[in-house]
Length: 242
Ligand SMILES: [Zn+2]
Image (cartoon, rainbow, N blue to C red):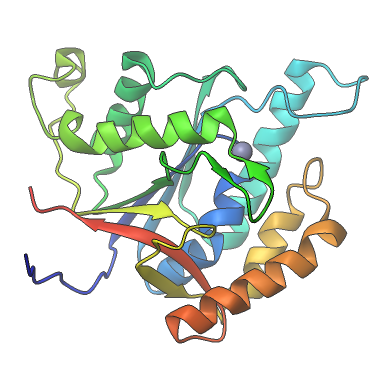
């Protein structure tokens, strides 16, 4: 079936990630590009980021605060307008009704035309030698279900209607697809690549720039080549028919 898919020009973007730093790796070059083109970009971080540290002297509470501060600093560098934290427990996220409702609430508040999320079909990648984190898969799945049908249907989560949050229809869902050959949409990040690096540097407690610099450089160029730019981030774009 041939469909006329319009060019994507986001006006309001909601990027949904599991942990502080996920969105910097997957979509921060694009977020900065969209923001500088005049779009309103919002971040939603679903877990409290309380587990991912080797530092035995750091308590979960200290880690949560540190990771939030780093995420806010990164967002500021990118021109992201707001960051919402849902505080689901790090490491054991389930794509359950509670998480979906919490994401629907933010979709109905921010009313994005474009939602960016983690790809729920990305389970592992043998070429890169990675298992995709449980939270990434489940937050991606919950975000997808939140976009359709839950944010759209007024009978879903009636408590949100009681909060004054009207149903909302999202036009485009972009799954962050940097590892995925199914990517069908590329954003030119040639002008925002340095900003992406600065935003990643803001996550000083968990991102070792010396370790990731070479990989980021090669990846952004490889995706740029695929998309026809110097550097790019890639996505699986789902333009919503219904
Ligand atoms: Zn993560």
